[in-house]
Amino acid sequence: MQIHPNFASPCILSRYSYSSSAEGSKKILGVFFAAHEYAKNPEFLGCVENALGIREWLESKGHKYVVTSDKEGPNSELDKELADAHILITTPFHPAYITKERLAKAKNLELLVTAGVGSDHIDLHAAAEKGLTVSEVTGSNVTSVAEDEVLRVLVLVRNFAPGWKQVNEGGWNVAAVVHHAYDLIDRTVGTVGAGRIGQEVMKRLKGFGLKEMLYFDRNSLGAEREKELGCKREEDLDIMLSKCDVVIVNTPLTDQTRGLFDKERIAKMKKGAYLVNNARGAIADTIAVKEACESGQLGGYGGDVWNQQPAGKDHPWRYMPNNAMTPHISGTTLDAQKRFTAGTKDMLDRWFKHQAFPEQNYIVREGNLASQYL
Image (cartoon, rainbow, N blue to C red; front, side, top):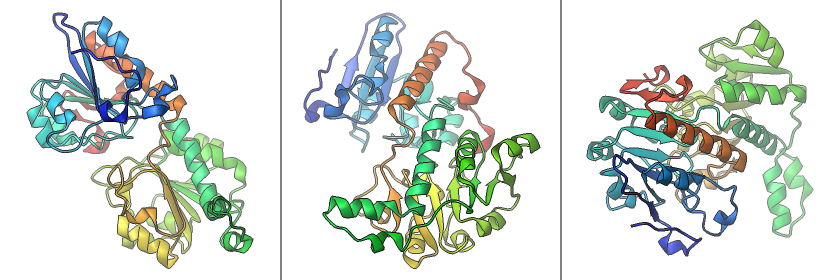
């Protein structure tokens, strides 16, 4: 069946199929969120309606392309279509949780591509055991996430959200905002992780006149890069946390970082410090963060990642005081979508031609897990 959508009603947005009967064709399954009326913007590539803009290209190569937004439960379109798919494309923004059980049923699966950065919604160890390749578009979200993190730091430190809420509700109470508003100048900011995003954040924060810009990472950036960014490495995480007025999380979710910011670690932070986490929600303990915001141990918490996405309506991070939370949006601006779409298409093209990907894009390569996930 071949269906060409024309921004149809939401009830039929869960699945579109683009197929060809060409001999030797691959079945590619994509899982994206439905954008409904917003999909009319042709730059909005990362939704189920526009399907990364690669449908015509895949058809011209003789492949079958099925896309869906329906990913929950054993009777989902994802489960039905995954059974005979050769390639799966997912995103961190509408994560299809690919468990060991789902992988066991995917008899033809060869390649899993994350259109974006962050593949922790996939059971990577199970994928490795199955001899699969998992890849992502490394670097596609760097600028977008770094800009967003600076934004959230300022939203928290300046206590912006309550003021915004006031005017939208018809109120006007300056005192209710400024009693908890500060300047960023002369503060100490630390980043947990100093990879691509961490470095871009530090570069952007350099102009704020900070007292110190600290970073914790297993690797040193080297004296020259540290001088360029105006930063200093701390080798002990807890010592760094005790010094910081603002802490930004820029590390992937691994077995080592899951639950890193629990009650005990948050207690080691400077009282009233702000914590920004656009990395992965599970790096922070949900209840520990809520209680710290309520007690004042944290001056506030901001981020766009949650331990389960979409977050439930009763998720405590929606309602805790001094939060700067949003849906998972930082790495999927229209500009980022262009980058991860181009990167996804490039990897698909290389796969069809039996060519290697850029080394940094591999998370699992033919059963071998990248070192940070070991």
